[in-house]
Length: 264
Image 1 (tube, rainbow, N blue to C red):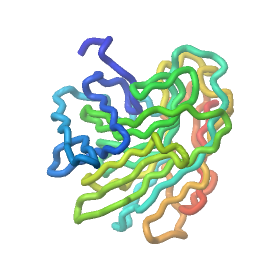
Image 2: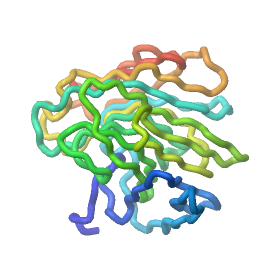
Image 3: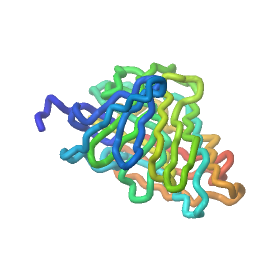
Image 4: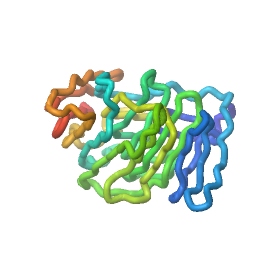
């Protein structure tokens, strides 16, 4: 795979042929186990052929994260997280930073995620903060909406909502509230049951490449699965700690929970 064909996505670098824009008015459809981008108006589906190229393992580039797995046998109906757009990095080295909440199926082979991004990815962007929704499969393909610029200190609400279930097939809506360009619908997929709050980064060469804010707190975390009230047993991890990165569970509530990710 030639180096100049690689583009950056949440989940790492992928060949450009494996990254697909899902336009407004379209859904990502996994009916019959075949991936396709379907036009809701015409019902015409463009099939995405299986990939023989191996994409990066999800988790590559994950600097710090918190995870809660829904093992209640009751499907999640919504996973929401709020967070404030942090101060920009004080030093620019073409780094890319992702902050997001996301849902994975058991086994972690894919992820649906509303993503705040600093830098340039396959969805666009630049030396500023922008938002987009992504669905990434660890075996190769990655799908995204348009990237939309946002302002420092803006409060974001990333939402993933179950919109339909037919037997073992689930359909979800992913978006940032108030940013309609980020709406991504996926239909006829396996259940998503693993919740994440994540800092992911690439091309970090020094600690000031991270946001100038000392941390980002994910707040108003809401996890709906029909049995509210029980604290969530978040499992935290910092796979890179060279600048003192770490994660603190401030409040494990499933209604107004808080998880804070520190850059230093």
